[in-house]
Amino acid sequence: MKYMLLIYGAEDCWTENERTECMLESMRICDELDAEGKWIASSPLHSVTTATCVQVRDGQRQVTDGPFAETTEQLGGYYVIDVSSEDEAIAIASRLPPAKKGTVEVRPLLPLPDSLALPKGDNNSLATTDGNTTKDYILLIYSQEGVWPPEEHARALAESIELCHQLDADGQYMAAAPLQSPATAKSVRVRKGDQVVVDGPFPETKEQLAGYFLIRVANLDEAIAIAARIPGTRRGTTEIRPLFPLPEQPPTETELTTTAESNATQNDSINA
Image 1 (spheres, rainbow, N blue to C red):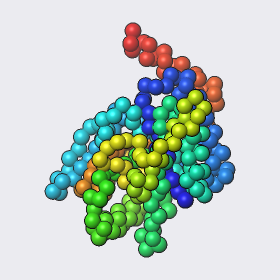
Image 2 (cartoon, rainbow, N blue to C red; image 1 turned 120 degrees about the horizontal axis):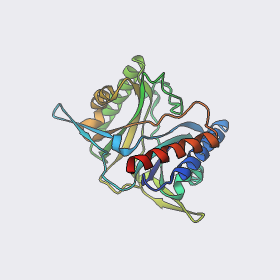
Image 3 (cartoon, one colour; image 1 turned 30 degrees about the vertical axis):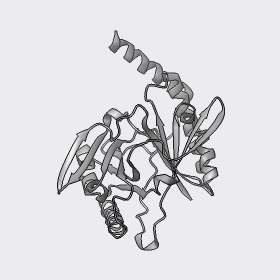
Image 4 (cartoon, one colour; image 1 turned 180 degrees about the vertical axis):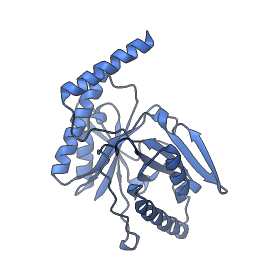
């Protein structure tokens, strides 16, 4: 069973050293899961200040800066894993460093019938960008549950799958998947070493995450154009977030510490 682990937290809750340790530990967990055949994809996201939201209403595209939900704790990254049970997905979520300061929402992916097969794509989002000539984005599709009547939902799903094949032919597709109902979500936190699991999604909003696309395009304008073609954008909102690129090889602790110290020095200079 495939699950998406959504990492929520306040962007200012980490010191530079803590962020360094979080990155190192997260990459180690990815390596372990990959060796066990359980890792599919993962990536941190750039700051929520880089978000762009797209809606299409009556055929007109509406684009706004900023995230879909104005909340203190925002989506900061994700994992997609393939494990034997929900309990195993929850156990992995509890191992992730952000679970100690934020919340990891566990959402099962919606299995598709053979007649609606997705392209194979390349969802290895830990890869570096292609010589900085392209950028990787995740398109997060938010909608209110039940906004699509069953027969219309089936047509919208088929249209989304066809879009995936078109993007794949254009070399822009990495991965995509619908998610099961937010009622199936579990929210996982770890506080003082104790695991806390709560039923339901983390954000308490009417419109919940219903699916995602991972794309590789030249720029934000291309990402916006693709977002406007997604059926869910016509009845909900698609939030565009750039992925935070990581090196092909995990950095050493010394390299990350040096980078963190350099960033802290630059911040001090700016604030002086």
